[in-house]
Image 1 (cartoon, helix red, strand yellow):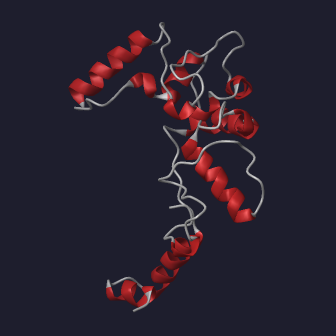
Image 2 (cartoon, helix red, strand yellow; image 1 turned 45 degrees about the horizontal axis):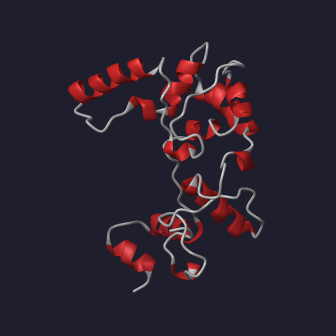
Image 3 (spheres, one colour; image 1 turned 90 degrees about the horizontal axis):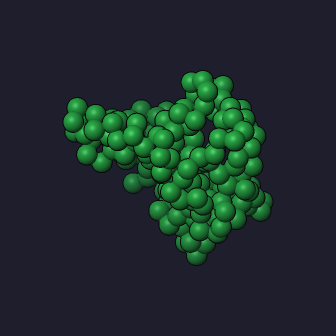
Length: 183
């Protein structure tokens, strides 16, 4: 039984079945870790484009891999501890660590409120992606996206980064049998 017939048997319209098949066969699925703002911390020029003043330098636990974003900024940690307590007490988020929230830390570093559409888009458009991974094993989740796009267009990958096995399989995997090209 082909996929369209299986989907129709589940009560899915022919058009939706067609769209699902196209997405399954032609789309790629990628995530960011923890969020797009983390990658800005890999390029000081991008931070300046966001509006972080010259002389204000982020304090990061992991100086290299921004996908492991966490700050140890002594001036900001008291704010983080208060937010952590609020999240744990009021929302039962025992896993919450505010010091791992790059958007909140970025907002703290800016002299004005951070705006994704204004500040974020300016910084992302100017982000020097090849500079973000400081060594081969950095940013494997985003590295998977770059590898997938480079593979799709048959061009060299512009960044030298590892790929994540959950988001980009080894080259030995037959991509014709994948639900999504990179999974």
